[in-house]
Image (cartoon, rainbow, N blue to C red; front, side, top):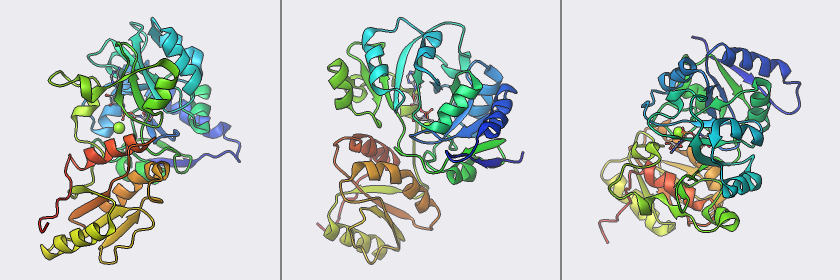
Length: 345
Ligand code: TXA
Ligand code: MG
């Protein structure tokens, strides 16, 4: 299959681009498109065969539910029932935007393979002109996970989608680099108190300002099955082992030297200001403690590491303020929990 890439921006008449995408989607196939978080791989959420093509193209385990994207807030009523006042407050406050709200699903509307094994549905209205343009031209809901091969970092540029899915999907709508850079916050509103299943662009504090206290999933699961099934899979990982390291230039230089002594080639992902002259590669992730810039740059940096022949990656951690919690959540997963420990200490 040939994968076509079409540029879509605010300066052009995009009617034809959307028509092309809508024709493909109505025909039961998939299209990659930009959102404000990451690129998504969309299929009409009411078409089971079309949704199946998402799992196939991504190589994604099919027990992991997909987010349903809608083009107007009112559409949520079609797919979810028993929507609480608090849930409505969140929609008013954060939609369109990077918050996925898990609600009780209305039976028989969304295709069963969008929400395998659960009675709930995760819904969000993306804040991106191309995503909204596409959803409105389609006039239907799009089931869309991130448009990467399963296990790879989510794509923040059309080129990332192309690198992963060329030949597997018919069309990529190229809307440039995405803004937020990490996936949406997933908030389960069917439990009390509501539970953040995945941190993202809308922070815990922002949510609590609107509806009061929420819980973090990690505090409630323990030995139960994870409630966001995606959380049990290895995620966001580049090929070489990645270690999280503290933002200390001197320690990082020592770590690079120690690894190189063992014959490793070392890539470092770190703040713009740091000077690590001996690193084999250095990928800047934005100014130190600028968590929004780091969120926007992280997945590109992880992918850049994959284009090198580094056999160790050191990634400099940031603090947990704002979107920093989401950044550290993804970085910890990419590291599979590993931190760099200096053995000579
Ligand atoms: O920003 C985003 O959310 C991007 C863009 C494309 O919208 N999408 C995305 O989708 O990250 P995906 O499939 O890669 O991640 C969806 C996450 C998974 O961890 C999944 O388990 C969880 O949301 N999820 C979806 N529906 C759920 C439900 N009904 N109950 C619990 N978790 C759910
Ligand atoms: Mg994903």
